[in-house]
Image (cartoon, rainbow, N blue to C red; front, top):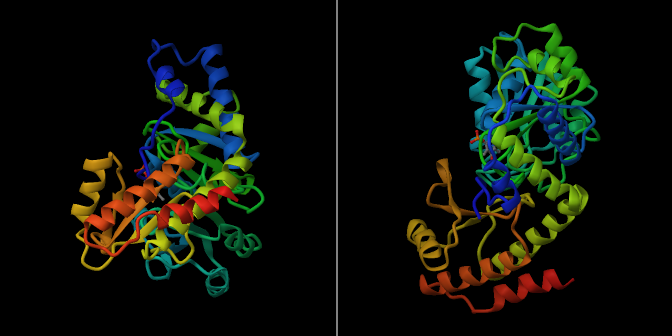
Length: 371
Ligand SMILES: *Cc1c(COP(=O)(O)O)cnc(C)c1O
């Protein structure tokens, strides 16, 4: 239960085991068209969705180099390891960064974004994050979209871990560029990244110099029109993606959002009943970050969970290394996984000398699931 790579459905694994075929064929174009239609459903968008052969960071880099020219100005909303990546990418490409920083675990305020946009009317793009995987915060992209919308700035969102598990309405919320990765809620092995591109983003891209070749989105635009890719795609991964998208579409993204919210609420109820403190002021529905109790050694605790139960959580990053653990609940995670996770936490905490009443966390989680 780590935030990627997540478990991959059997049908997707089998899809990858097939013989290579050539990609400039009607058969493969049909597959790409299906992948694009499935991605539009998951991303809740009518915009073009480019499929890139890279990890999620590739889509972030593509967004940066295509949205803001060298010497241009960007507002970066910073709070956590992945938000920090937007700033570093901007710096590498010679973009002037205006920072709006909040402490790790806190959420961005839309009116603070509005204030900075007023102070700097020449901001070309606002870079932010849907699910900040280092802190477990789910940022209010809808509210941020409302203040960025009337400005000339593009709204660029890292939805790499959040899209496919938590509500994200690309078009309704006014997201101009949305970066997504294959290996998190989309239940596909690592190696593909997706970028939804709005008409306003295309106008920007056409009008600026792009210091890119492989990630120059104009090449993708031309190919997208023919259900093609500009360069050789990762054919086995596209086959896996199509299978995983079929599974998502069979349920429907709206239902997945609602179900994920219920699972997250159950897990949070269980964790808090055990006396543990959530790390995020605005917890995301795809991942729960929890502070380790005083006196519990993080490494030993996570090793025990893995050794005894085969349960793998992620530890903390950056300043929160050794202070938190992170439980992802996306993709193939279901109700029973939530209940058994809380049961394992109870046992491991008791064995670590914590004062927990066995069964109370499980009862709290089950009560939420029973509603
Ligand atoms: C995982 C993750 C990334 C990085 O993705 P890679 O596929 O490792 O490049 C970026 N942002 C967020 C929020 C993530 O969770």
